Amino acid sequence: MLHLKSDTDDRWLAQVDEDLESVLIDHAHCEKKAAGTALNLMFAYVEDLELCREMTEIVNEELEHFHMVIELLDTRGVAFRRLTPSSYGRRLNDLLRKGEPGKAVDRLLVAGLIEARSCERFSRLADHVQDPELVRFYRGLFESEARHHTTYTRLAKHFASEAEVVARLDELAAAEAEILASSDDPPRMHS
Image (tube, rainbow, N blue to C red):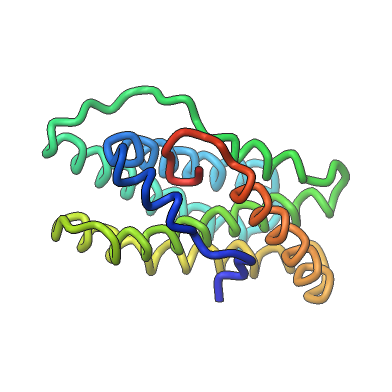
């Protein structure tokens, strides 16, 4: 369903155990970035009305999630602050093809892979953390992240055939797995 080529390993869960606060703060930043990605896609492909409608929904959901994480941080007495981001998103975006329509396909598929990885990580977190509030929180986010992944993948087919989209998704998913495997970033949602 999620088209990922690897599972999150125990190394990441150990990072979470060592610095849950940073992972929570980074999660808020990720929700903000996800809203920005959807908004940028809406501006870039304004002639695609279905894409614009879908991106509006995603922007709204991601901003709602951002506020939920901010509230969670606040109730825990954790100040929201800047963090050095992981290299994950930049390295994925470095894979984008330059010309259209390949660039549109890649932008949508990369956004979808990031959503898929978030979904997978939320599931792992819900199974791993001992805090009942966090378990409920991460289980509650799982469905929308999976839906976002599906939406991005479906919309990529507006710009290329299904066969081309599936082949490119396989390529990008393999690269995404390599990026995570080679990461030496500090604890982040996508480290």
